[in-house]
Length: 321
Image 1 (cartoon, rainbow, N blue to C red):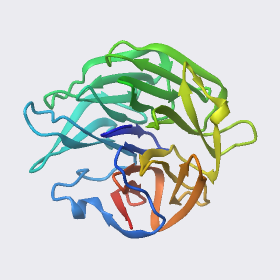
Image 2: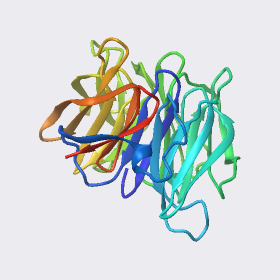
Image 3: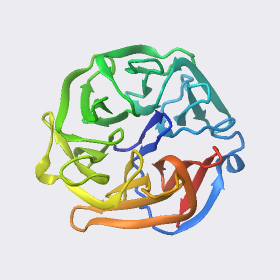
Image 4: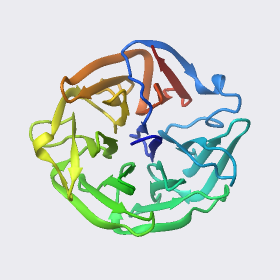
């Protein structure tokens, strides 16, 4: 993503925090501190607790004329989609009438906060719309025909086009694009790769990148990433990281590098937060785990910060040195 921040939010018990940003910051291996967001934010990012992931983005305020704001999205314990606008003075929460089985994704496209989610009821169809005037109803809400997903979707903007990606019930990735946020065209089904979790998207060095936790080709559980163009994942520049992940990926760009944050594939159900980074001339670097940062679900990257739902259900913020 470019000069702003696009994130994805998803829902479900195997859920992931996923964020994308355009800040020129680099994630480093040392953790300065781990704090409860509610103890840092005067209004709190989430009013209460959640065992689901979250997503965030910078975008135009929902109140016309206000300066741009920072947005968080998450799934409430009642399965309703929630969007928090952290303004310069006040924090306001919009609860949408839509419910979801999995974490939602959000992204800023044409100065609007778009929300993508999978329906709570079977067949878990994919819905996309944008927030307006803090209404509880998403504007221009559409359902992508004949598509469903058991995982969180992803959103990203590349060359003024909004892209959505998701994992099918058969673990196959699908990518679709829209030039206006309403009409979705050029559906691409990636048959040669399956994934354990929903894929992630990010724009990097003028290309759209797809990252996912692979199931095939001897790379089961490994982080895979490659560029996407002309309706295909470009296998010629596909990278397979040495790290394993047990969640969807926080996928972002800092300091001209692709960065990853994820729940590690540890045992016992409570696993640590890990990060890694990739540069074309250096390859993939394993940054390792962060002491004291544990989650049941996925992880998000945002502006040099890592956000995740702790094992107590609170949103945690990790600051990197």
